[in-house]
Image 1: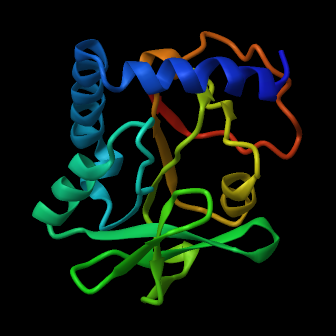
Image 2 (image 1 turned 90 degrees about the vertical axis):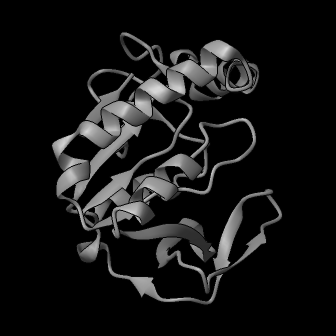
Length: 179
């Protein structure tokens, strides 16, 4: 299948799943796996997205990081499909982009080398860390220059035993997939 076909099938299924009791239970299990992981425990600065309505809710992750006094950084898109991560704290002002994503306005930009762990979003994942993103390539470009650890949390509709899509040379694998 083409990645666009994967997106067309997974995104609507995911949108329904995250609102269901099974989806909420699956999310709780994924949070627990993340919170118990050594990568999470040993990280002091963690990058995480501000989720859209039809994605895994990242607020519990942000809350846990704040409770542990870890530094939370969130992405901001830039021209030419680039992005950077900015500190998220009580002073951070957020605005919705034209795509409906909440992003920080201003704020302290964090160098990729200062981020210990990045929780990578996406549409579909395999046990090997192969992923289908949302199509613009922001994360693949960022991950090429990122040397920290990467984890993803794949809800049931997002998890594939093997890639049913072409894995391109420029695709960057996620190091650990919780499912």
